[in-house]
Image 1 (cartoon, rainbow, N blue to C red):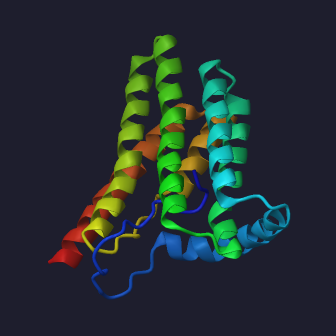
Image 2: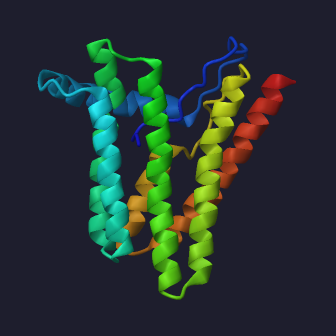
Length: 213
């Protein structure tokens, strides 16, 4: 799970060249990357590998899911942010050490999807157990469209079509869900993530339609 956009480009055909589009990941990377690089330099001096950070960040988020299941939402939000921040620098560590490779990218993408999944499944479980089936369904819908945002990009780039556009990607999903856990407004957070993820999914479908036309 990565605090920057972690939906990895898929290997495949040469990307179709189209006119540049300014998207959320462009300005977000300009803001986040310098801080991530500084933290990564410190971690490299400690001889911590990128894959270690990826796996550790995922395990920490699993801990956040356990806290959700036992209804410790505030601490779950704290732990979720810690895991996300830790995992957010693994790409920078890989670049600095010259060890960026396809397996590391694959591992990061898979664990990113799993980390989102375990948090939302925990929310489905705890809201169902509390007798709130409507909220459980909302959490399920949130999980569905969160995964579809990432899948739309991966599938498009597997076809050779660049598809990084999207104003509500993984970074925003993590932040909004964590804030919902911290403040207790988890229903509002789930509704926001579900709606905006659906819009981003449709945005990416439109992007592929436009570029493939």
